[in-house]
Length: 92
Ligand SMILES: [Zn+2]
Image 1: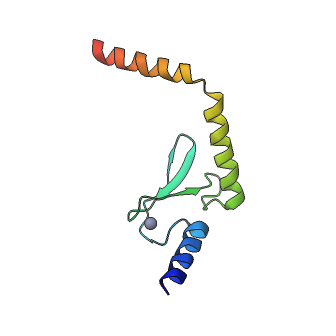
Image 2 (image 1 turned 135 degrees about the horizontal axis):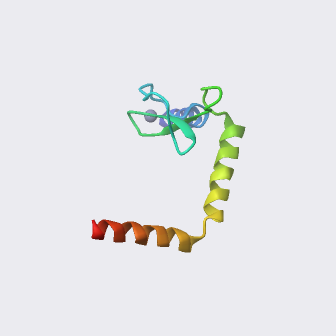
């Protein structure tokens, strides 16, 4: 029985984000719109255009785009940005 419950919960989370019902309002950060579950902190992504949860295909596209962005970012530029940030803090 427990196994079945776990499987159902897993499917539910895969399909609908999570099994909880208490969500924040949707908000947009860095061009991504999502609600956050108040119980488990899971992010449920929304389409900013339709204001509906992303379906599987849209989620995959978004993840792929994110992965692409990460790859495009040169690691050295990121380190340099962090350094200059800490330097400006030190000066201030
Ligand atoms: Zn949740």
